[in-house]
Image (tube, rainbow, N blue to C red):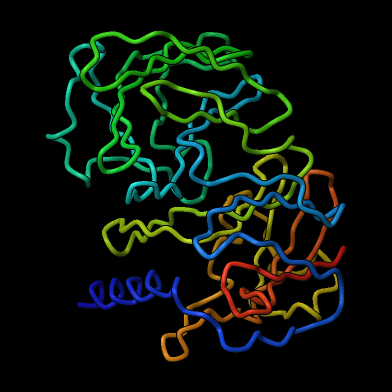
Length: 336
């Protein structure tokens, strides 16, 4: 019963997209640098933000990509877009058929929803749905594809099959095709070494490169739709707006005890920096059923070590614009 009650709360959250806020919240503090970004009521905007320059460095659309490929010399991991909602979708999912004959995979009708895999919310490379599609490693120079065919579920009615043929320090070679196809052309995706990942989408029965993130040393956090997995509810997926950290040499520590104004250093007892992409996540705010509004948690603070080696403290102040429309996070940060 507890699980069903929780699902009811999640349903209320999804319906809250139509609720407007009567009055904006008063700001909790005037210290440090204050800024806001506009992600939209449906959280459709992807906003990359840099603390050193106090600025948005790039924007994109969350529905524009389907999966991405690690782009450094030794990178071989593949990530899914868990926040894609086109055509009623609930993020992108993948299923490993373990077949090595491309023409043997023709249908997805026998696959149960629970059998599709997802990336872990932490975003770490060793926790992806595609997993180790290869044997060996690029570091040791003996990476070889297992040639297994994967079915990718883009949305409830849009499927494709693919396999990764090869990966080296410069590019990936990928086969993708509609499920009914016997063969597929090989798509070469060139790595961009100044970025964490290169992105693709599947449209018009073909794979296409997509420009998403800026250079990896130019940003610290990204505001985006994101698939959170509630493991206590049998891996129930729920798409939220979240703040993810740059996976390139960026780490964050969360603090719900000290209080933003009392944090004077990045180094004090009990603080622990981690590379988990969702360490900031979405629970710096919560939905209040009685008021029908999101409320910021004033006790949540975050310490950020950027890829430039600088430290900042961060907390959130509001989630609404001056007209009371959700989707405009306001935040405050201060160098340490």
